[in-house]
Image (tube, rainbow, N blue to C red; front, side, top):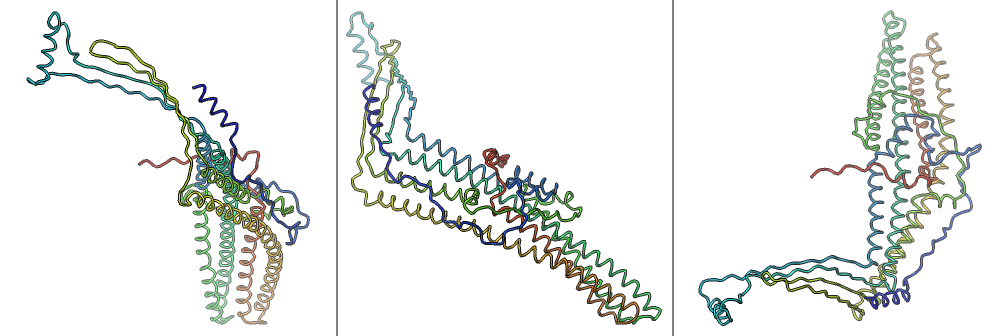
Length: 497
């Protein structure tokens, strides 16, 4: 056994690691973003960017989602699975020891008048003293021992496998962080959309109430003959159109509540009572400087995950290359045996066995070489995927900056448009009251004001959603200090089968 151990140690010292060594690629990124940069930007805690909206309800929903969301539970399970694969890969390069044991009992019994029984009687009668010698009624054996086997990792196939498993685990951890980023942004987007629908419903209801009051006045004045009956009829039509806009907006707000509940891992109706009370949109959060593109690449979880998959694919080439080289395995076993013959214990024996075995691949019709080529192509695909992810990250920031800039301009224009529409409606209403015009300009002015107010409400939602998209594009939503804990939400209970 000492000789076998010494031989294994000698082989271990001469072992090498085949396959390419991984070097992290350097992304080609511009020196700065070209989209319009915010002026007067302030620093925002990207790890908790949603607090910049100063909306306690939004913060509460995101906090629940980061603890209970099914998507994060799935991501956490994948991380735990990947960590177990490291243990599995590492164990392939270590000895395997098994305990063995067995026992056997055989009973000898006379059957009828067979020749064997007659022979037994003759043997007994031929002995001095008659039957002093007797054939035992049974015999038994037992043994226990250990078997050990070890395939030496001479060419680093196991080491490359461990390297690949570690890289895959790190990729799974970055995927879990990216899931946090996406979840927070999706919750914020749905929440803002819900508040936007509620705001539009309030606008439509307020307009319907105002037009209802106008209809009441017109009906009274028409009855006394001060205005034509046609004005009241047209106002009634206008009122019906305004009232018809309320219910669909309330329905859309309700469906957004369902979406939010499912996102945070609750039943669709679980948040209706909590969110049914209409509230104003949260204030527009401050703009933040996007920083340098190279910093973005370091922060984006999806880019980091793609880079780790590239590292894993590179290590897998080494696993395939090592399979083309000879394999050496060592086995050793010891067994302690006991023997009983009838009532007599005949003793015990100890057996020690050691063996070395080597296998040399000679001809496999190109299977191993094809596997190496396959793994190289998978590495090339992983590199392309990484480059595509880098380009996508840069585009996300550029697009978000453009959307924020253009939506802010559009929002300012719509806000001015609402003020103009209100002044214009007041003017035509005053002219109508003194008889300088008919009722048609009033109806047109009401419709224009309602459309402009709805447009502003939609722009308010888009501007805030664009800000949330910018925070997401910058990789906000996770922090390195608590990254390990952040990927461990409460595990879901499996269903009973």
